[in-house]
Amino acid sequence: MTIALGADHGGYPLKESIKNFLEAKGISYHDFGTDGGASVDYIPYAKLVGEAVASGECELGILCCGTGLGMSIAANKIKGVRASCCADWFSAKMTREHNDANVLCLGARVTGEDAALTLVDVFLSTPFSGDERHARRIAQITALEE
Image 1 (tube, one colour):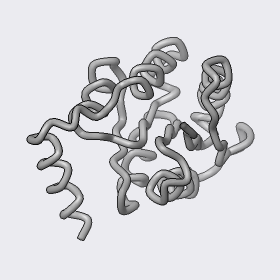
Image 2 (cartoon, helix red, strand yellow):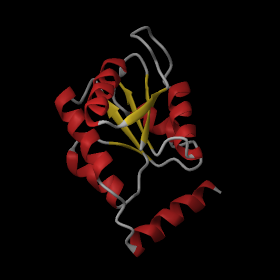
Image 3 (cartoon, helix red, strand yellow):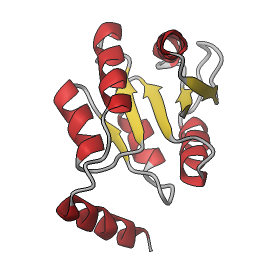
Image 4 (spheres, helix red, strand yellow):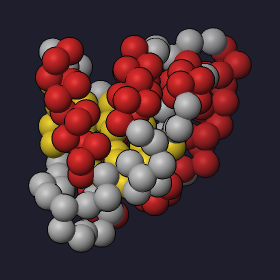
């Protein structure tokens, strides 16, 4: 599994912590930036990560900004992306299990590092249930993209 990572300046420190977490777990990743704390717009990073996930280059993505909200909005504009902004472990679990979300968005200014790493772990370790009713709903979401 390869994870696409991206962040703006507000999410940069959290992205770096996530990289360390992934390395410790032996999970490969592609870091799409940003590479420091200088102010940048978040949209280009959401686009890069979203396109990497939608194309299959990376199986899942993680985006970090101040709240996770802007990244979520931007990433969800990319066909094939189901990005979810999560701040608790139950939401991170359910967004994978029920919604087959493929991008996790985190807010570095609203979620502490330990909590964020727990969310990453839950998101990456929870498979989609494959349940017929959830698959039907995902098909309806996909139809909205058309």
